[in-house]
Image (cartoon, rainbow, N blue to C red; front, top):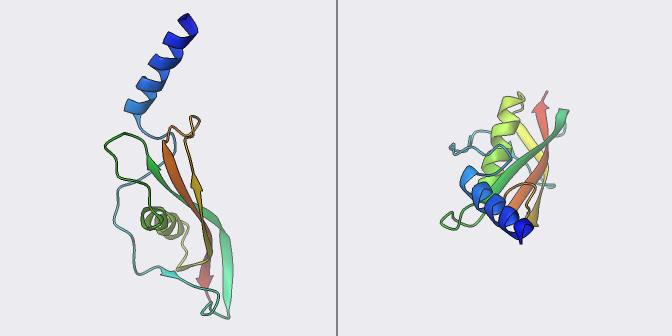
Length: 115
């Protein structure tokens, strides 16, 4: 019984804290181009792999979306000095106690800079 009470309190407290990953409510930098397989630039340098994250943490939060995860991905790319992103993929996740999310979407891509 004590374990049940401790777990219940922990879950309720975690729901009030917010997701345990960095998520920003910033406008997406639309000037940073996301390339598809058909229009990838010919000459570019790879900066590195990046991730963006959209999380539903509270009951009143909106559902996670690919657009919100992509906005986070663009922000990460801009911080790395990239001017584009290639190889974007999305992964949906269910309840994740470690990330403190009811549901989530992770966007993964490769930050690039055209030469």
